Structures are given as C-alpha cells and as structure tokens.
Figure 1 (cartoon, rainbow, N blue to C red):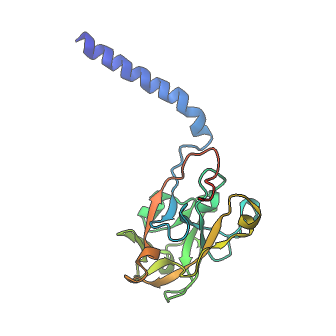
Figure 2 (cartoon, rainbow, N blue to C red):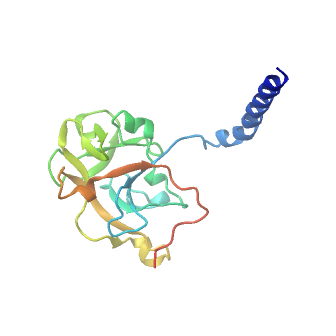
Figure 3 (cartoon, rainbow, N blue to C red):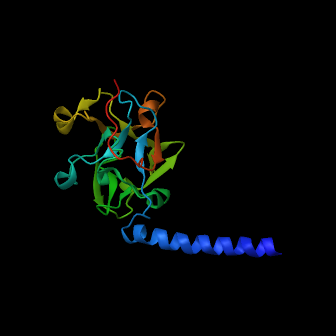
Length: 198
C-alpha cells in the first residue's frame, strides 16, 4: 500500500515537473509537430532530398514550382515543413505559409505549386505504400526528376554544397519507383547543417 501511494506521488510530481518544464517551449510553439516529406532513397544525394520551396528565408518564392532540395537538417527549414495531421487527411499543407501542394493538372510532367488550401481534386493526395498519389487520379504520383542533382545558388557559394532536383507529377510505375517513394520524418535536432559527404 505504501509503495502504491509513493508511486502515485512520484507520478504526480513528474506531471507537475513536466508542466513546469515544457510550458516555456509550448509558449514558443515548440510543441507543433512538423515533418519533412523526404525521399525514401538517397539517389545521388546521400543527405537525402526533401520537398522544398525555391529560395531561402525572406527570399522564399511561394508562387514558384516546388522542387526537391538537400534536406535542411539543423538549419532554418520552415520551407520544408509539412503538417502531418493534414497529410493524414489528404492535404500537403505547409503550416508556415498556410498553403497546400497542388498539381497544375493531372497529366505527366505537371508542376507542383502552393495554393490556398481548398480540398479540390488537384490538391487532394493519398499517402499509400510510400507513394503520394492524386486521390482522384491514383495512377499519378509525385516524382523526382530523372536529371542529376545540381548545386543550388547557395550551394555554389556555401560549404554546405546543397543540391536540388526537379519535381513533377508522373505516372506511378516500377521504372520510376526509386524517385516516387517518400517518408514523413521529423527534422533532426542538430546544432548545425549536415555537410557534404566526402
């Protein structure tokens, strides 16, 4: 009986401690769950590609076509963050901008851009078996381009040497499998960016 009471007291103390410790983080919005939409395979970038908006910080171009970029682990990455709760409901929503990924059309090669979230057919997705398919056109998948990755503008002048590659809608196929598989993964908690592998 004494042991049970002491266990209850310990649990209560831990709950109070957690509330006291976590509240400053919650006040800063740190409890917000976000994920990267990260390529399942590294392709030609061992640090992996993530779906990204062109530009960086105040130069982010939310009207430009989306691409994949070296995952921004350990550095500013609001332009790679997605809301996992929205993904579960079929919307690829970027909480920092309040916009959702939409295909320009349901045809091969259609660009992907950010639009006001309205749940229309071209921004309604199904994440299934690691593929992101248009729900109304399940034969169309979000696909990384076949071209080799190129150094980004910042990658040419910074030691991080970040890489980018195109992104579009394409027919879901075995031939494109490695470029069509994705995983939802929380950004790594690092103190600095992952540098290029030698």
